[in-house]
Amino acid sequence: MKVYKRIILIACFIFLIWPDMKGEKIIRGFSLPKPFLTFEDITMVKIPDDYLNLYGRHSIGQSFVNKFSNLCRIGIFVRNPKYQDSGDLIFHLQSSIDSPQDLITLKVAAKNLYDNYYPFMLPPLNTMGRGSFYFFEFKPIADSANRKFYFYLESPESREDNKIEIGYFKNKYARAYAEGLSYRDGRAEDWYLAFQTYSSWKGNIFDAYNIIWQRLIRDINFTVFYIAVCLLLITGIFMVSFKLRLLEE
Image (cartoon, rainbow, N blue to C red; front, side, top):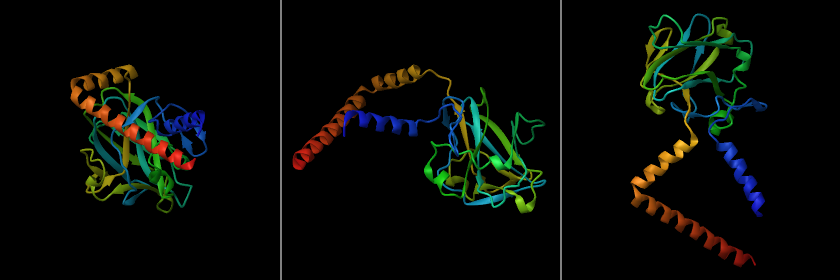
């Protein structure tokens, strides 16, 4: 394969795995997340065990502890619907379940819940057809590090026959435990809501490289060993490739 083809393949691969970039929808069914650079805090890597029905006066909530500053996105796993005429899904973020007011209130029409895929998530969560994440995005909360939050969802205009289904896990340790409780209609439950959180990164990329370099210098013996292992692997790959080329000729 020619060099330029390899460069194109590498560039495409980097684009696909690049964590998060600001943008709008570039392909039908896919959205590029915002703000520009974010990272996952609370995560999940499997399909939810089951789904909760959300409609009328019912509410579903979750408390959690955010580990980093600049919380900016919370994703809820929603099941692909049998009905498209559900009411709006309303998201409320509070400092605690007893808080008298919301920090953030957002609303999304049900018809837009199921067209919010992110191309950088693990394929099983987006391609199995059972459901997908809808991400509520908001201005980064600067002082969110090690802070407890509570969010709850409601859909007062939905009915039992066109409810919105929200994913949950039966065992809270089956995914990243976020030190919180799940709630239905304000009462604590023993299941665990399927959700994800993201925080934005405000640092300088050169600062990050500088931190990595300083840590490598501190453990110079490990660094030398690691470089030696990498060189051996590269040399081995080159030698095997060279022998295969000779056999082909």
